[in-house]
Image 1 (cartoon, rainbow, N blue to C red):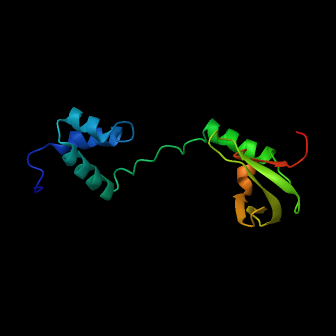
Image 2 (cartoon, rainbow, N blue to C red):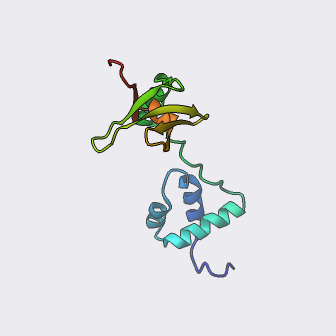
Image 3 (cartoon, rainbow, N blue to C red):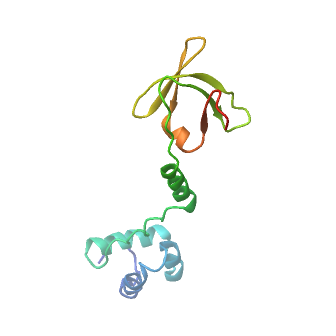
Length: 143
């Protein structure tokens, strides 16, 4: 006699669970069997421990969204080459963005470093130029 399971006839219910646990939600199976959700979950764990059923496989990994893919393509296509010692106007694409004017004094693997006429330094991420967040124009050149 099983303690805690009452007088439920599990033979038919176990067969139903084994046949449908991969195709149905536990909530739906519990409703169809006339059980509480928690009772069904406990039974599934017991069947799993006995080796009668396996774990449900998770859904396939989501495919990359078109938006993310397009952004990655745009980053790879657009290359920006700035020359050290040249004066640039750096523009932000947003309407609120303020222009910065300064000389490119150096670069690292991730940043461009500019010095303003007032003498302060400002760093911009290289990736921001590649994705079009910022635009650098040489001062005095025609577009």
